Length: 392
Image (cartoon, rainbow, N blue to C red):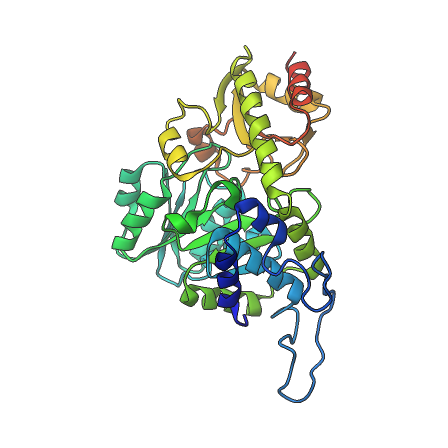
């Protein structure tokens, strides 16, 4: 990536507040034409001026101005050195894990997203990489899981869907003592509420399909690193595995990021009110929400996060209630994603975590009574009224 550090210096020199960074991105406008909306360079290849003489772009799989604007923007927002835009969140996870080699060992959050869990159960062992699932909200459990060949800890915090919170700074301190890389899936809180690289992590992963893009209309993944050596490995993976993001999708994510601050504030405001309402409903037995002061990891949350995000899960009194709820909701949509402006409800044991063995799901609490809710930015009274009528 050409003169990448110049863009980071530009950002620091300006000293803008967070919301302004979201709106304006790295370059923000097009320096060639002055276009306020950064253009979509919808091209597969670029013309050479002469043999060995290009304008800095050769082939979109390797470089593209729209994609680079997204990558630079995300590096600025996560305070890393380099960003990488990929075709999906799963591609981003694979990119982060690509630094592992045969014989290595990786520790992962125990109730990690089902797709990541499946990679750890199948793809990694096929490549002779060992995996261990640990409750990373328990530092002693993390320490006990470390082996001589442990090369990475992959943290999801808060976890999806059990809302556990791992102490990124403390895990990073322990990891550095053992020369272990720390990767953090920051999808649920985004750089608006949490910045793992500033807490000691080496790699940040996003399913940009979710909050970053925010409108449920494209798929994308992001990886940001804080070390140039790791960055080169990521760039090679992206270049030769061909998992690059399309220019149009990159532009959609850029457009979504412009309103990230406003959306995350509304998501968080709504989620707090919905969580409190659910907690007082007679058919709801437990609500998993990191903003509750009696959440077991609340002290960690307020230490490393500036907000609580837009996600919660809850357990109702019976399977019948759970199934009736997802059938009867009207404005809230029954779907398998999260992080968009619309409220989405899902049934994790069937939709998002079906890859996880039943005995593991049950142990975690992902049972037939368990519901996950991505709270949107609609009027919160409408969200609560929809839940109320569906639970009657």
